[in-house]
Length: 255
Ligand code: SAM
Image (tube, rainbow, N blue to C red):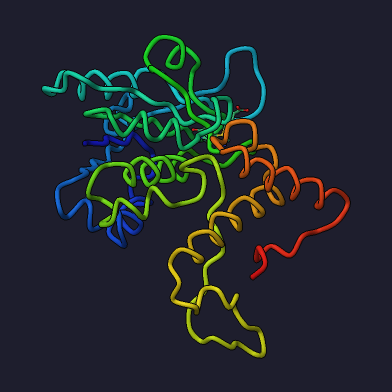
């Protein structure tokens, strides 16, 4: 799949996109990312991209022209199925479900705002959806665009080498992942649950499932409603929620 990013700060992207799992996915041709400077479509000899808000008030507002010209340029550039996504603190919050849906698109244009944001006619008439990465306001849409790029790319087959790793991550099935440990067995006097050293795969799987339920009940009881649990799992979950009421559970999930 292909992402086109519209930004006033194109230099912010390469350092992140060159590295790690995402960098490899791009090098392997599974994901392609093109970064475009909105100012290239700016107006007049100074390539102006912003102006004062109508009605007065603080700050500058990004003009619609440069952004809409970029969207049109990209959409006529042979792309039939392009979804235009505006990064905005006013949009619905980004979730795994949104990311999985977007991973099914051929092509996505990400529009990053700056200053006081973008002339609202862009949102009303030229974008397909808005996405927020959380209930706070950043100085620009570049970090949100990178967050979206990263989370969507993880759902593009092949980007994360082992699909099982994506499917066993927190929130994939609506629950948090069980705790994990590695060497050394004893770190400054702190051990790990014995069951993980037992070599008994059945017991390990059962321990992990229970730890998943206990941890989710402790940290994110709100996830219960959407989780698909068997009756006995629900009983473990409910008991953990009950036990945690007023206390702070040991999050390791016990041995
Ligand atoms: N004045 C705007 C408001 O009150 O809604 C906020 C503008 S913000 C300073 C500048 C840009 O940062 C926004 O246009 C958006 O692209 C981006 N941005 C800030 N916070 C964001 C968030 N939580 N999620 C996604 N984008 C965000």
